[in-house]
Image 1 (cartoon, rainbow, N blue to C red):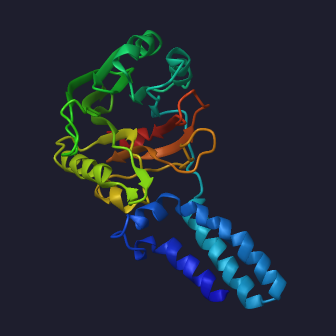
Image 2 (tube, rainbow, N blue to C red):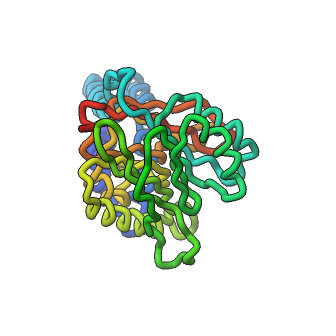
Length: 299
């Protein structure tokens, strides 16, 4: 039992020890890594039944490791700064107007959407445009802002196996009193679990393309908002996490009814996320994710 607990601690600390060559099992484990904590109560009961102090101590160490990794203390949030919201609104969303109201009521300065269908654009614009007069839309992603946006352009993240009409990323320059910030809105390809394993090839290819675009971005300050279809523990997103950081809390965002993973992110470079939270649910299968960017690191 002590050996099993030690193995659990090792996997929590070094999930890369699980190989990714066969069916991307390493990435699958990393996607749901926090849920390994469910083994702790079972191990504790076994330790009590055996009346083993050594086993109990091992479980206590494992619990401390798990808490340190997945229950970091929340950073103090303030009322200032730039508030951003990111939401995959779901292309089958039956109530785009109500969804837009939920996002607008958050008081966010920037609102990024994915799975934004052209035929629903007017519904979102009717609500979001009132408080966010600046807009950028490319393909099925969009950005609404209280502050001016310039140099809006698509970003090509299309995997080689997809057709040319696949457009799911944009870049814009945000102008605030603190200066210029490059803002990216992205929606990486979906992943599927099937007989061949955890299918992440397309997503991983898009992540590498995005990382190359971000590395070439001339503005030092970056905000990246999007549905990455992966957690930041997933090694398939390592090209991005090597360049960017995410602060604040990491509430789970998908699926809406019983969130299992945080796949919606607010990432930054040369800026600091000082707080993060999720908004009330919408009809989408994702929860909206909000964050506050520290103004002390915007300038």
